[in-house]
Length: 379
Ligand SMILES: Cc1cc2nc3c(=O)[nH]c(=O)nc-3n(C[C@H](O)[C@H](O)[C@H](O)COP(=O)(O)O)c2cc1C
Image 1: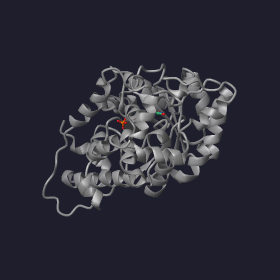
Image 2: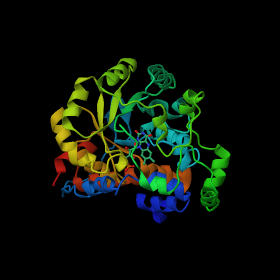
Image 3: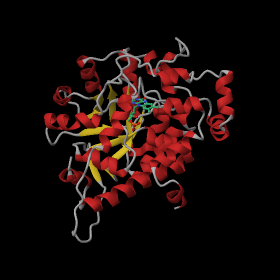
Image 4: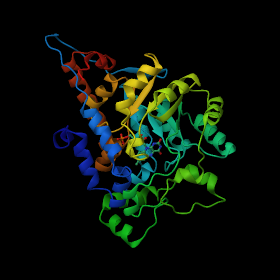
């Protein structure tokens, strides 16, 4: 595969993406909040995990297949929800959903995607997860949940780590608004990125289609705040109970960093906790999910499903997260770097990079199943 020579690492896809998307789009995708210490902590925590290789084990044929939340997956990782995905690369949601279905890998569609659950659910087959931002109006919330179920999404992910809009200073400096306002400065950035511009013309201006269904009367004002805020609520434990009542399938809560909260979520009937600092986009003093993961694992016990994200961009990183106590790993930015670099072909290439890296490193570790990485932890 030629891309395997020219772009062998996720970092190559990141660099290629940066050269192909307008600056305001890059700033949206790449930025965190504040000094970006929390984002840096994600990477630092991964780099700090050392695993002990083993020798003289003879022929090893590692297998990445992983059962998680009652479903067989071809590998222990998937695609995290990214709002306005279709702004980053035209047609992103559909491309990622198709890849997920083909690759037996979860794709989590965001509440603030540019495509509706009805459009994306059928494309992701049994691999569709739907991410819900806490919507205030119970009728709207319940309607969204019902639509996600009807569209075939199997897992509901309630994101709880946005009690307020983060400042996201880089996005402000880049004059990013939702929906994007076509100022002369933005138009100039677009003109410099013809592949993105043509693709966006073809796919239509990215809009928050699901949100718009409910905002028709109010009419969304362009804002630097996250579009989910137009309808948001600050959820509490009662809110969680209502969502649990409404959703028959597996329910995941995303954005948890405290062991005691993870235990309480488990006891409230949540099927998995997603340990995450939201890619460093919400609270700059947050620890990396990976730093707190061992304490959360210890608190919830060995059998309870835990998901981790934050800074993951190689097969080795996936193994590091599993070694520290995760059962499943999700990546956000990396899939979008891949799309920005080479469209759907880029995302398929990233899948190859991650799988191939995992297989090579499992051979180094002398393990046959990804979960066995826990037994090779050196630090
Ligand atoms: C551009 C962007 C948009 C995001 N939008 C959402 C979202 O709509 N809902 C959500 O739960 N998380 C959202 N996240 C957080 C991701 O789901 C995930 O937690 C984070 O990106 C993981 O870190 P990584 O990008 O380093 O892999 C977003 C992240 C990025 C980078």
